[in-house]
Image (tube, rainbow, N blue to C red):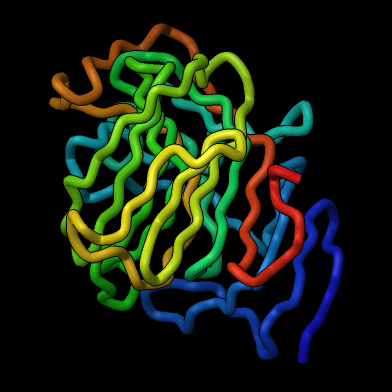
Length: 260
């Protein structure tokens, strides 16, 4: 049965039938809506969870996650980077992750990144061993703070990445909001900036991701990644990435997204 409902500020469209369950490594996966549009004016617990009190296994991510670093004000989502030890890391970052796993479709977000050496503002899909032993599949927008007039695109399939592509944006991504999108299809991934196609992968450089993944938004500081990110020096006050919208719709949907 198809259910159409509006929950607070978020439009959730055409759910699959059945109970929606919180996804954990030991629990059944939550069924994903075929479309949603979240303007990120408040925390919609049906859709999202705030990462809290843990850190990624990758030691070069010098950041742990704190729910206090995910906050809403002035009609947007703020992800903060602060000096506060978490799970053995010296810095605390904000991370917002979807409860459901999403597959082929169009993903969009309106983002204002952070311009700072050593920092990364991210919008991506991910699944991996944490989730019932899944292989690592991922599709990325990564804004490297040392190069705010570029964005790095990438994907991973079965843990294999190294498909980085750097796109010259023609603007400073830290100065204002812009709309970033990717269309994930069985035979291609197409990345867009403000509605313009900027890159496409068709599998010539390696198999494309095929496993459903969660949607993630985060801000983190690296260490030992001088050649890629530069060296992070905390400026003495919080740094903040801002997100004004996230949307997903299936490839055959005509529902609106962040780009209208």
